[in-house]
Length: 404
Image 1 (spheres, rainbow, N blue to C red):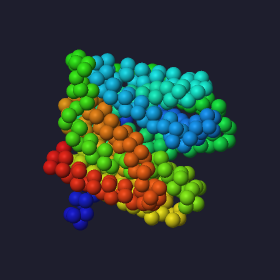
Image 2 (image 1 turned 45 degrees about the vertical axis):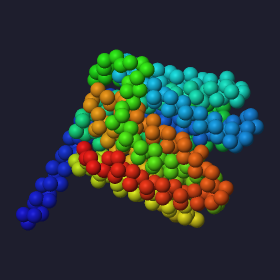
Image 3 (image 1 turned 120 degrees about the vertical axis):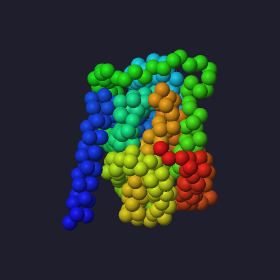
């Protein structure tokens, strides 16, 4: 009986602690920024997944040129993230978030005017810059509004919006383009963007984020060297996810699993939503190692299962594992980056981590796509599973000796 009473008391304390943390995190500004991030990333993925087919159909472009139109969005996103690292420190999070949203809105308006490939490339680049600036601003704002002791849980809850957007964006984009055409898709995208701008004006009384003016041409003004070393892990782990985004539809079609592929990211989002609160609490209470090692291992396992998938069950199992592994690697990775710097460097830390994160996702399809003609999609995913597994060794080398 005494042992049972102790366990019951411990469970009550844990539940109370979770409720206290949840109440401290989910305040007005946190909810506003999370809603903006959900809508913005849904809009981004809606355009991203339908852009390649639209360029091929409208301009008769080759697959490589059409793919480049999407790759330019990733490049724009990297540029936006890099530039915004210093600007958030100088201007504050709110003006930078507004600038990013306005840039993205302008790019959506430009969709109707892009009647040639050069104009499409410009439109995609501007859209990427807008998402990069706004996404970095939302991440930095969340880092300031969430109490430091709850960063793991708070960032886990915030990044759930991106996981949900990854399921909603492609589903909405493909459904609208097939059922109603590209014109309706663009109009829907514009409405989502307008809703982001309306919600933005509910931001109130943000914590001070401005720091002293840093030199414009100093790299230290934009990224943080302390986070670069840790972010190398993302450069190793993220190509696997990038190749899933880029090649999953083709892989599924090759194996007659097109229907299952449409559910793959729903499985990913589902397990991400279920596990991120728990992994966030583990990070807050036990440090990063207890989450990061399993997250990298499970990501490698997801790629291995995908490489061997011949039926629907295996494909969806890979999606579930990816949500447990990679989704939690992303959220805890951002929290670790913040733990490496002082409060005044949160913007640069967020920028640094996501530059390497996006770079890994963007480079993955270009580098590992060369494996496909020789080994097929299965061989490529098998190779990626071994590369990601090597991420465990990289993590141990660059960060394993340190715990928050």
